[in-house]
Image (cartoon, rainbow, N blue to C red; front, side):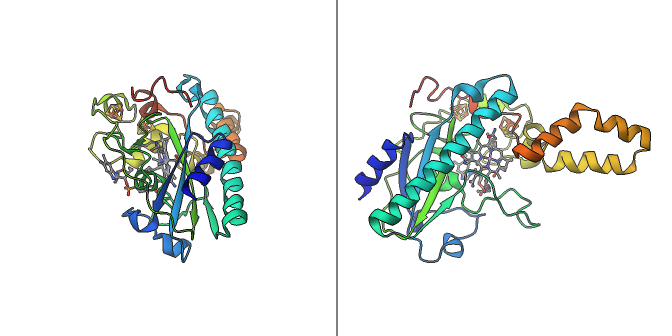
Length: 257
Ligand code: B12
Ligand code: SF4
Ligand code: SF4
């Protein structure tokens, strides 16, 4: 079954796939898989190499490439889920790239329903690097994951033999937000401030100022590009303005899918 699923995945032009038994998935902060999908037994993790867009100095092009990947992965995940249902009589649930995600006081909006990095590691698709990203042996850090939970009983793929991260330190030094200085931990607030200026925090700052501003200043605020960016985020969704920790990494630099 594993090889037949692999071949279906390859036909969808997905770059890599790994399997993890639910019992091998360990993510200390995330909810249990049982609480999401009672009876789930394995996680099919899909890996997608980012296009060179993510290396563009123009963040609109970089984010556009990520949005293409998000749309492609959604469609592929759905197709594979239906294939597992039809061909194997499986029960299936898809896990999105990032959103939707629980927004509550406990998680502060920074914990996914399923930690795709921990799932990818359990599925033998890479290991945690010094930037806390999962480094894929061929594609390096420029790899994005999605997953399908299923009640099919598929044992885990073997873990990667060697961590592809060489601990060169380029990602830690190259983080413009200084969010990677503490080993094994990303300072979420520092990363968000630098990488998502038009996310929730940016919106709260803008509307708090707007609420207190006199009429003339309000008019000026609405004619400011900062507001235009927030408005754009309202219809295209969250935008990243930093891809540095993926880009500076030399691992898999020249990889093609
Ligand atoms: C919320 C979120 C964020 C938040 C919070 C990040 C965080 N620290 O968890 C913010 C907005 C800051 C963020 C930033 C980024 N994100 Co983000 N994010 C997510 C999301 C939706 C959930 C993550 C989560 O649940 N975290 C909470 C729990 C799991 O983290 P944790 O238990 O504390 O584990 C951490 C540490 O313990 C450590 N760790 C655990 N074990 C080990 C072992 C070793 C040896 C080491 C060194 C570290 C280590 O690493 C973990 C991450 O910090 C996932 C998608 C998903 N559903 O998984 C994407 C995801 C993690 N993001 C991703 C990416 C690419 C980014 C950014 C590069 C932004 C961008 N331009 O895309 C930055 C990178 C920041 C970084 N270097 O850590 C990718 C990572 C791909 C990969 N190859 O690893 C994911 C998986 C999205 C995807 N579908 O592929 N992200
Ligand atoms: S996305 Fe940017 S700010 Fe966030 S950890 Fe990576 S390099 Fe640092
Ligand atoms: S840049 Fe260097 S230290 Fe950072 S993840 Fe890549 S190989 Fe590891």
